[in-house]
Amino acid sequence: MKICALDISFSSTGIAIYDSEYNCFILDKLKGDGTKHQKFIDIQKTINNYTLPNLKEKLKGIDVLVIEEPFPFGCFSSGLYALDTAICQVFFDKLDKTFTPRTLEYIHGCKSHKKSQSVTLAKDICSILQKNNYEVIFNSKNNDACEAFLYLIHYMLLENKLTTEDIKDIKNINSKIGTIKEAPLPKTKKRG
Image (cartoon, rainbow, N blue to C red; front, side, top):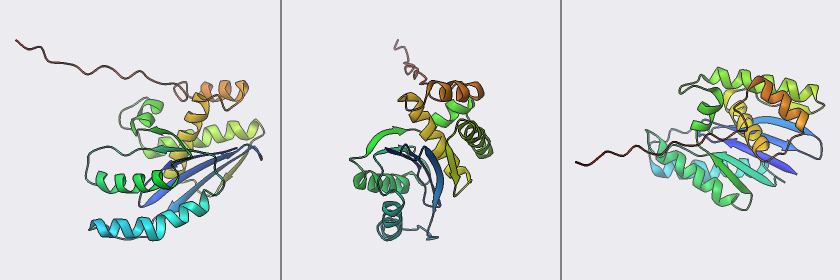
């Protein structure tokens, strides 16, 4: 079984794959094409002519897809929604779970974490996996690949796709990864 997680972006999409046949994790990225996205048509051209064809090649043979969904608002959220939607349409039969960017905040235990924290945590988990006889291939060690890897590990822990020993070892360095925080109910104003 091949499980893939994506940290989607126009500049650099992080890719993390677990291949159970080879007991192997791969951290990779799809670098953006460098287009300045001034218009919606530019976004669509990049998606159709560059991103989707290259992702299809990199994700050949995957069985399960997990993605980070974009925030619903912000300077470039409409562009990211267009990109995420296109990817979801192509890989819809593989899509199993989406995580919000807040998932990483929860894993790191702080509202505004640095990208370097994700890189450090991913490398620490990779060291544990290598000690536990997994092969880890770093085609990229950038923060996007590392954050995709954290989504992958979070998913695998939630779905019990790792051994008890692996889970214990990973939880020793980060107890929040692979757990779900209950979202608080929204506060309501009293009318009066």
